[in-house]
Length: 156
Image (cartoon, rainbow, N blue to C red; front, side, top):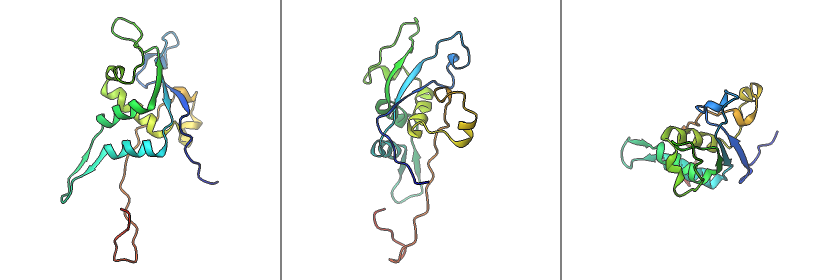
């Protein structure tokens, strides 16, 4: 089978793992409508997650700032997101994202960055894609390929 490219700007529903409505039929869950980002948008967020210090061994990994950035570009809208008085929080990308907790933003980033894809095991155990959450993707550094110019690799 050939590789498949991203289908940017598709929208899918997602319910947070911590949402009481996920497993309780009498509770209406909050539904986040998430966009499928294109490769450039995904790369910008990944770049904000990782920062290598020049001339040293220090690696800085940022989670929460990039999580809110992923939510800013990746959430299309939401439904049934309530404030402390059970009033609907209207979706406004500039002001209402601050109503998400850092852990909620981190979980949403994981789903946004995964593009809504299911692993084979998740697909087999699926009770509905909108009710499944994916783990937060990990970033690993791959070794640079050897080249004929003394080990230097152009473009890195």
